[in-house]
Image 1 (cartoon, protein in one colour):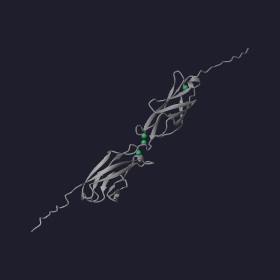
Image 2 (tube, rainbow, N blue to C red; image 1 turned 60 degrees about the vertical axis):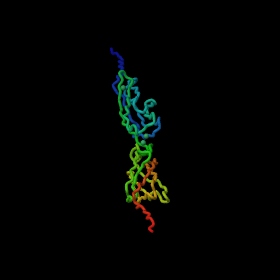
Image 3 (cartoon, rainbow, N blue to C red; image 1 turned 30 degrees about the vertical axis):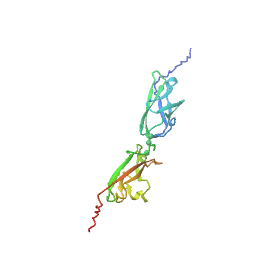
Image 4 (cartoon, rainbow, N blue to C red; image 1 turned 60 degrees about the horizontal axis):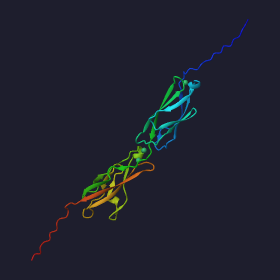
Length: 241
Ligand SMILES: [Ca+2]
Ligand SMILES: [Ca+2]
Ligand SMILES: [Ca+2]
Ligand SMILES: [Ca+2]
């Protein structure tokens, strides 16, 4: 006599597969002027287990200005707040995928996100104004003073160019009295000064960075001409009788 029996073997899933995180797209570097809630990355997750063992959630390290937004198995990385490259130029972002098994398995994906520069700082002069003192009868080309500005941006956004603002002094262009080295801010006399004609010459100096568009600042340099004893006294002789 033959008989049949049906043997039903139920293979119960064990949580033997950790979740996987797939990077679909990533904006890197992230410009520092990116508004909050901008999507900078897209991720998919998968887990070959079934049921809760294959249910994946994606979390993020808490000390970064980014957050994870989810839609089923699709996740996006968004900016949470305004970024500033001048304070933090790079973030280490950890994405932690965790399944629903017991115990749960996790996979960590580490992203190095760089923040790229935007020209969001104008240059600023290190002093509110500058004084230069020059003995009259100077040879042309004498160094008067050095003005200096700084700019916390990066690259061209902080590359500075100095210039003399156009203007007139005693009917002549300011540039005929002084000139400036555009790279280092050294200010030079263009001519010989005469105390009897001019005691103080205010010069407006500009600086701009090389960003697009450039940002600017101005400062006034006061050039004080110092008297030299270059006129012999005139002796008025008493009349001779
Ligand atoms: Ca799993
Ligand atoms: Ca900034
Ligand atoms: Ca700048
Ligand atoms: Ca900047």
